[in-house]
Length: 355
Image (cartoon, rainbow, N blue to C red; front, side, top):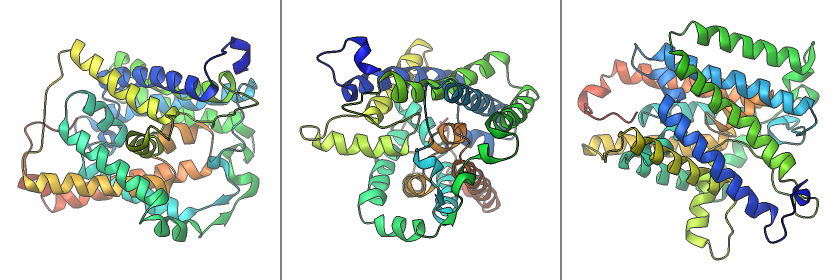
């Protein structure tokens, strides 16, 4: 398909970077304006949780329906994607999800939200992203890799049951039930219609990315990986590219991460919400760094973050992704309850919260 566009000097990989940059800019703008973040839905202020959940679930509904429509139309085939592997590494997914959920509470934002906040001038978020990327890369190929391989070796054979499409009724029934439940909650969440619309547009970027990498940019002679929105692998990829760009070319993840920061910056400048922010105490710094490590390690173990596994993964009807999302939510809820019980927030009140 890629060759039919007449590209002669640009490879599919190079085109994927440009495509990812554009998708990232759109995500950055939309997420900045809607404050799209799973952490706010799980452990935000009492008055905002329901509306934040409504926005996030609207995005999930659109992502699921859009991705399944693309699969039905033959525009993309996700059957060979790691989300649908026959062996379910359940222990790594559960442990990683709990770690990621706890980490996003400690840093007051899931990694996608922190990427957006980086574009708004939040130096706390930038610091978290760097540590997150280092921890993720260490888990993929470094000192934490033995933990990943050990936990990942504990698997449950699922076979065709790795997808919810294997349930009675097939893919469309499963997708319809997920989308219907999400939209019913969203419509009752109290979120403003315009904000819900922004959440829907965020969700639409998921099938757009699937189709872009799996169909439009597909090249028989130089195939690229089938990818959609995610932040764990792109963060590690961007870190590696930044220190070895002369030998390691940029990929989809690098373009996506850069685009999100750029899009958030544009939106923040236009709305006059850009402002420099930094840490306010050593205790706050330590909490954010601990959360960054938990998210980096947890994101790799779980197979993705709240967007990579939560939106993109669930959109494929992957059982592994659903398990990861449940674990992330559980980890966030448990961490929030423990922090509240210990009155952790009273030790270091923040006049400029990271969201």
